[in-house]
Amino acid sequence: DTGVSQNPRHKITKRGQNVTFRCDPISEHNRLYWYRQTLGQGPEFLTYFQNEAQLEKSRLLSDRFSAERPKGSFSTLEIQRTEQGDSAMYLCASSLARGQGLPYNEQFFGPGTRLTVL
Amino acid sequence: AQTVTQSQPEMSVQEAETVTLSCTYDTSESDYYLFWYKQPPSRQMILVIRQEAYKQQNATENRFSVNFQKAAKSFSLKISDSQLGDAAMYFCVYNVPGGGADGLTFGKGTHLIIQP
Image (cartoon, rainbow over all chains, first blue to last red; front, side, top):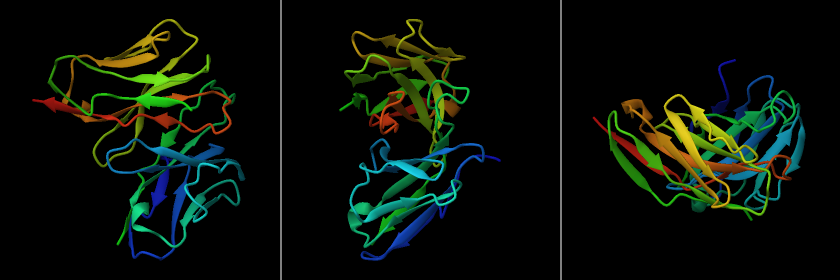
């Protein structure tokens, strides 16, 4: 396993369309996180899963955003009715749950999916 | 809410010289972690160094070291013997263990330029 992978790497869509991004975490990691990074800013936390359970989703930007991790492995992030303001880099990260050998939360990041909404 | 402030949008340093990146944060927690992450151009974010708030000793990883001042809520990164491969965006990051959201809180980043 070479790390966290994300697909697609780039997505161009028209306003109003739905888009879905996929993240494959490091295989032994049970936690998976989604972040959004806009130009000139640091990543902004959106949501995270422990196994298949979504433990935090209040940070999702609107009800147009949803995420799933149905079998506790890969995850998808969907944006419905995209808007131009959704243009950003969407980053996925994974980690072990705290206590599984580490007291802190080292998150390993994927390369991101760059979304452009026209 | 916790906030992380990086007041230097861009820094430039000559190769082989030393550079210090600044970071301040605001929190009411007593137990937390601080990190510096590096994001090279078009490449993945990677962890550079971490600091546990309960530890007084400053963390060091090879050419990278931090100056952690808990009372001042300051967490700077020193890069010694700068190399061309150090060119990247550097993010100061805060995390509370066991915090409900468990997500990382990032600063806006500092763009580090290495002059050959």
